[in-house]
Length: 516
Ligand code: NAD
Picture 1 (cartoon, rainbow, N blue to C red):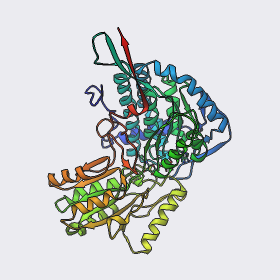
Picture 2: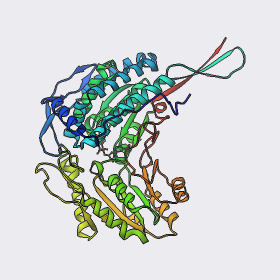
Picture 3: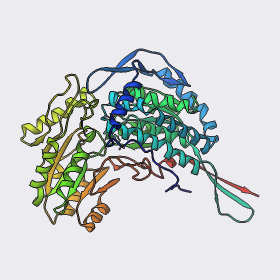
Picture 4: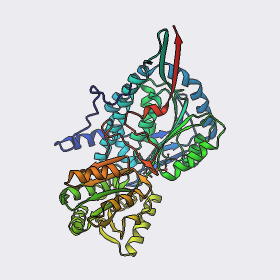
């Protein structure tokens, strides 16, 4: 059956950073766990591969955090061949066997969280708050998919039939799965994809984002230590256009779990369609142009708090982040003034400092693109508020949070992946036109709603073409098992990560009918 809700399963507790002494203790543990020479080399068949190493840099300071070795074509081919050979046994071993290993990995991750927190901060530019959430989510994915593997992939489902006939339906792994992840959740999304594919009985070729190979490398080492066979899971760092393209163009793969930009999802879709191998599955979770609808009954303080958190936490580098604040005209001036006031309080800077709210942009290229977009808006007189630019490390990539006025909600045409919030107004009585305009963007990831009228919230939730609706709260930080996450249209294919249907997309069904 479908495991919609398992009352026995608990999410990871994480840490209460509001408790006195906890942030300081964590910071000390992170400093102790920090490694001086971490090398993210390809791992194929459990064996570390050699090659030319390149530095991986801290986006906030420019400091070298470790080295990465890109997988070459021969390494990719060897990994695919080994993964293909090993997959049957892994699938036949059953859901409980695989769940044991994923749960052991979750336990190890909690035990060694300081190493992973440090890498999330140093390599991905996360604040401590975000790093703690990242490790928690990764642990939750491991345990959630393990529980589902146990429930759905261990015993056959017995189906009805006439007397003298036994009908069973079983779930099996599909084959060799490729997992390609983004840098913005370099542990949680990386491990989420990998653990789901493994839980369902596939062997996995894991390619992390080029910006964040170190934390992914540590995660693969952990899974191997937890008993996932080396021929079942291979680690292949490198650039999208080389390693990524070699993997998604390979005839011997059966599916790709991809999270990243809409543009790259399209490229992978074309690459899969052009191969001679089997018709492959593509699970793609992509970008968004997420709106928040605020009506005149909303509580201004709550709107300001939730809009600022949704738009600027993680420096706006979340696919779920708020991009477009849609405020009812009659309360717009108050709301905008409050949002601008809250923005002025944000500390931008090095996330290694505990008081930092907004860390760096992931790399120089992304920083330059966002800065150019903001400069254009400034030249057009559309910048209405900006966070202060004080004490920024000289070699880091920063864009302070900015608020940009639009004439109409349809003026936002694409995802700007950074701390850039747009605001537009709408007229009372034109709510349906507003919902239509938001739907017309083609993206469909998150939508925030702020209203004190339940009927309005229900009306919007029912008509919004999005995957995740958040009412009277922020619209980021989906919880595994409670808020299954993922979009539609330009935002993704589904099924939702951390939800009951996810593993099934990684599986084949087999019906066995026996005359007895
Ligand atoms: P990206 O699309 O540039 O890269 C994602 C991954 O794809 C990387 O590992 C990259 O190396 C790889 N890649 C690039 N070109 C490739 C190719 N030709 N073939 C195969 N692989 C290739 O995205 P990013 O900049 O790393 O991440 C930010 C994007 O991810 C944003 O658009 C964000 O909205 C999206 N995102 C979506 C979700 C979600 O759940 N919907 C979650 C996080 C991030």
